Length: 113
Length: 113
Image 1 (cartoon, each protein chain N blue to C red):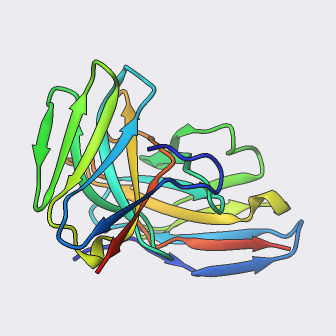
Image 2: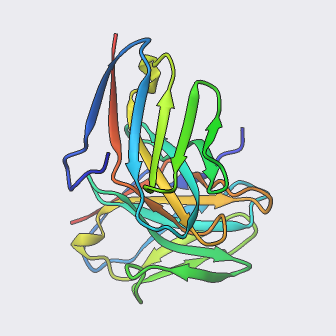
Image 3: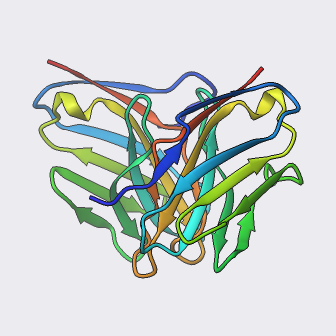
């Protein structure tokens, strides 16, 4: 069964450092998303991406965040200068043209020290 | 149920019994709703979805009920199994299907053997 894959599963970084979280969406999907989940809290929307551009972003997704689809398979989330409060699980999701279901990856746990 | 911070509402159910998980949504304009299951260390896994023009939808051992009058969504799991132990989230989509999802706080289901 096709699945969304995310790497790494756990990323530890120092405050102020840049991190790149990577995702490989399901191959024939066209819509891509990033969400995050702070420990014990709700899953929160960060950004959606379609046709090589951001279609919607939340208040959380400030200038420190960026997304990119550098090739035909990867979808990345970059945080330029990490803060302690960026520590969370980051989930990538994708959906196909016909369906509305967003399929999620297993997530990357980001720990900012 | 909805959660605040670290305190997820928990539903304990005997193996073989039926489970009912409730969710209140906030936006009357939402037209698409999804239930996700999240096991420890994994990403949200799609269970079932329903559009606002329906009141009920059934899947394999699961049924989703939508009451638009009171903005209430429920997930019924028949013959609950140990593998059903997880946190269950409802999510709503505002506007066009497939756009950003707004998640509820989650309910933890514990299945007792």
